[in-house]
Length: 261
Image (cartoon, rainbow, N blue to C red):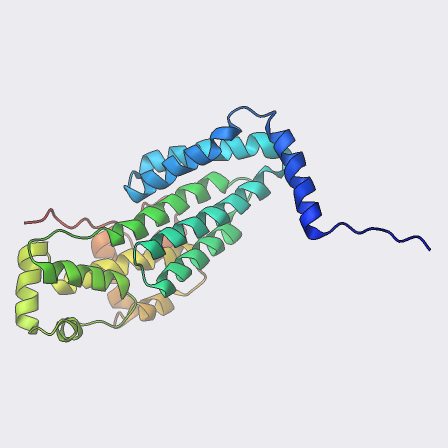
């Protein structure tokens, strides 16, 4: 009786590894892949959005050189891997674990829903927009009042909760009047306005990359009704939620807090 030796998983992986190593040696520039990826992560972390978009295109070109007809599939896989890398970076920056995990899930859904032969560069740009937006939330504000800095970070982490000025004041064990005064004095915007700004910013991703109804998104971010959500959304973005959803070319609204005082 002949016994057929079945390769172990380790043997199979080792064979693939050796074959791939020999194949990749034929392609110029591939050895710099991780060096370029390190540059990409640096640019994202430093909010150099346009540079990051160009660097990601360089990585896509390197993947395409190796992949041939499999380019779209390999690029899709790389986007998912990159999203996981960025989720880990967020966790290291003390982003709450549930938010880091949700970030990863959102990126994967974006890739799976929008990735096709004609849209893979658009998806690359959207990922960079998303990465830099989330990273910007983690940049420690440097206002002259530490409570204001902590409030900004708290709102960024809890933006989907039904927060009120009273809730935030209670969390930091100060009066609502004192909190409202110091926040406006240092941030140049009222606390209620900043809550609305952050909700509008976050809602943009659900409008563009989910199938949720506008009314449901309005409820998710605790606007009293869809009409109010539309009014506040248009106030900051100049377009309605429906217009933003229907046009992929309308840029994301970003609010920049003023320099520290």
